[in-house]
Image (cartoon, rainbow, N blue to C red; front, side, top):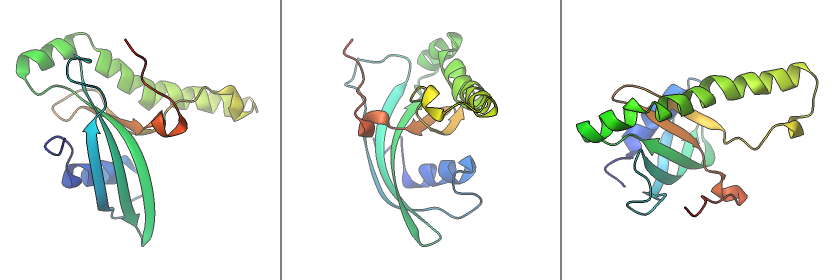
Length: 146
């Protein structure tokens, strides 16, 4: 999956996400593979990445689940017409933070919240549309057998 997820692309995405403030991110290790076998998903290209970054001389290990829209114009137009990608990005960018804020404002325990994957960076439209979140596989979650 090197052609889809490169160190340069990931560095730009992580630095733009604000996850590490405005600090420079150095990617020391990037391992990526398809999250599903070919033919198991038609709307996005799901990729699992294990990444080791250094920020201010501190090492961080990240397991990421990245979804990218297909590159072919007809396939991409079909995927965009369903607005599934836009909707998912909206969930991570707006709905989950709002739910979390409401739980906190009510003084409820965070245990009330479902185990949402932590969003790293989500952009639902445009040529650079991407959904990047923590990979819950490291917590034992698995993609269902369809």
